Image (cartoon, rainbow, N blue to C red):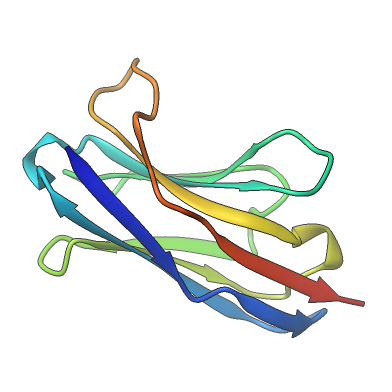
Length: 119
């Protein structure tokens, strides 16, 4: 089992930046990929960004490309999400999640961290 804990959310104005962090513990050796998802009130959960644990491949949702950057630290077992030029539509609860293989569901999830962007 892998445990994930997010941190770094908050309330900011449009155009500001935030950095989220996801700390992993437990069966780190079982991690294939870590991703960030978000969910706004009344909306479906949305993929934001993902990174493979064993190499440097990264993935982004269309709405955040060019503004968000995902990175990882294989020593500290953390995955960060740098969010720049935040927009009100970026508001939501941000979750990190872990996948043990390419074509399986994300089976481990953190508790989420709230990001609120005011206009």
